[in-house]
Length: 286
Ligand code: ZN
Image (tube, rainbow, N blue to C red; front, side):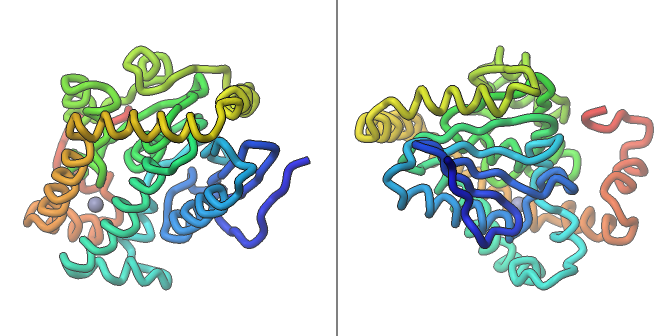
C-alpha cells in the first residue's frame, strides 16, 4: 500500500515501495508552474531525498498535459499575493526571482542524487520541457508534443537552454527559431525521450521502468548518475546553462522585450501582439 503526503495544494506526493511519484496537479491550467507549484515540487523532492525507502522518483502531470510552462498569467498580470511576482518590476528583482525559483530549482532536480523519470503526455511547452529535461529519463505518451515558442514572444528561450543538450545543436536552432513542435516519435528519434508508449499505458509503463531502475542498489545508481552528470559538465553543460541564464536576463531587460511586455499588458495577450506584429505569418505550433 502506498502513502500520500498531506499539505500540498498544487501537487500530489505518493510513495509506493521504492518509488515516489510527484504529480503536478493543476490540470485546469495544463499544470502551468506558479511559485506555489515550484515550491511544492521542491518540498516533495526534500521528502524523497530524506526517505531511504525511496530509490526512484517519478515526475508526472495530472490531466491532458504535462505542463504548459511557467504561469505567465500570474507573472504578467502581477495579480495575487506572490512576493516573487512583485519583485519583477526591477531587473535586479527579476534576476533574483528567476535565479532562485527557476535556475536553482531546476538544477536541484537535475542534480538530485536518486534517479528520476519524467512521465510526459500532451503539451510539454517551454519551461515544461525545461522541467522534464531535468529528469534522468523521459517516457512520452504517444500524444506528447514538445515545443518552445518563446523566441517569437521576445524571450531568449527559457532560463535553462536545454535544447542543445537534448536534441543536438542544429535541430535546437531550428526548433527555437521556428517554434515548431516535435511529436513523441520525433522526440524519440532525436533522443529527447527514452520510450514512447500508448497514452493509456503511460502510468503503468513508467512504473514498470521505475521498478526496474529501483533494482539497482542506491550506491551504484547514484554514483553513476553523478558521473554521467559530471561528464556532461566536463563537456560544458553547466557553464553553458549559466551563460545562457545571464544572456536570457539581458534580453529580459532589453528595450525590445520591455516594449513587448508593455504591448502585452495593453492588448491583453501576447497572441494579439504577435498577430499585429507578424501579420500573415502562421503562429508557432499551429
Ligand atoms: Zn526568464
